[in-house]
Image 1 (cartoon, rainbow, N blue to C red):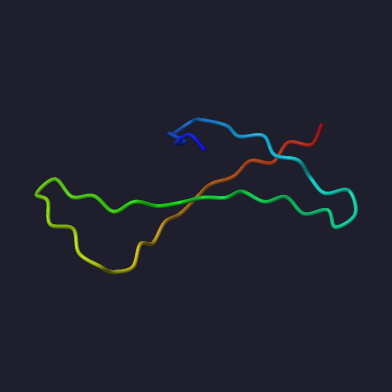
Image 2 (image 1 turned 90 degrees about the vertical axis):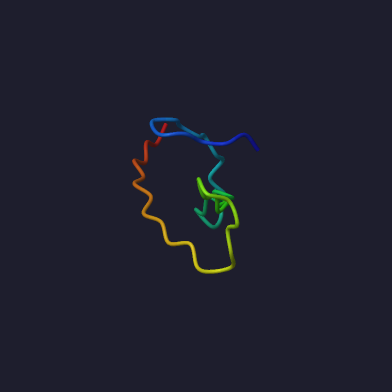
Length: 52
């Protein structure tokens, strides 16, 4: 999957039986100084749903 940037959109299929949709997301830790270490990544994702 390609990386999503601010303002990008993604279309996924909704399962007609369960009415579920899955958005597989990943996070990558980076630092401007290098030497990223283990820890917890917290994020806030704003989602706008559109049914068609």
